[in-house]
Image (cartoon, rainbow, N blue to C red; front, side):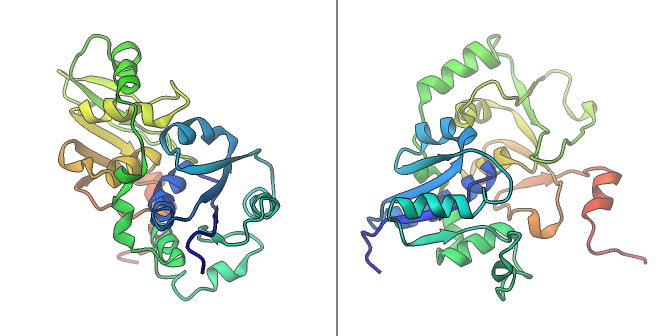
Length: 259
């Protein structure tokens, strides 16, 4: 393999998966290989600003071809022949779940196995992103918390799920701030997260960010699961796992006791 040969990554969504996979791309970029990565157009404002070393290619969402064929065609048109598909499984691609590791690994682990990259690299995300600390601070001061009060940060929206929490979990002397779509760049939230007294977070791109940046040693972090074991990422930090509620537990339960 020519180490200078461009590498195309096939993982057009979701944004949390892209965050998980960024250290994979960085592993090959550090070998001198240009990286080309087609992604959902809505992710572009976050990625071009904070991950400028990747050649991001915008895709319009559609049904069917959007996940694999369209990205592959786009890469082929750019004469990028070496591609790496990082999906755990895809309709119409039985070869992905036929891999011997497919049934016994979590979806983040299998990306690293497929890529031939050490799984511990997942927690080297800090090396992958360029922070705009002035912009982050302005976002905190002018949009999120102009009063400067101590706060707990809450994020309850996953890609296909909304979690619920008991308001009594948050001390009354702390302000509660919800992570909401107030900016088109998720990395604008980084200073907001760093300054929080605690983070209560469902399984989402923000839990991935915090865990992969290694921030659970500086923030009191609480995790609300939403998926079964194979679709829940490996968390390397110190999280307190919260009860997601009876409905979610029923949906995600694989191992049942007393039955």
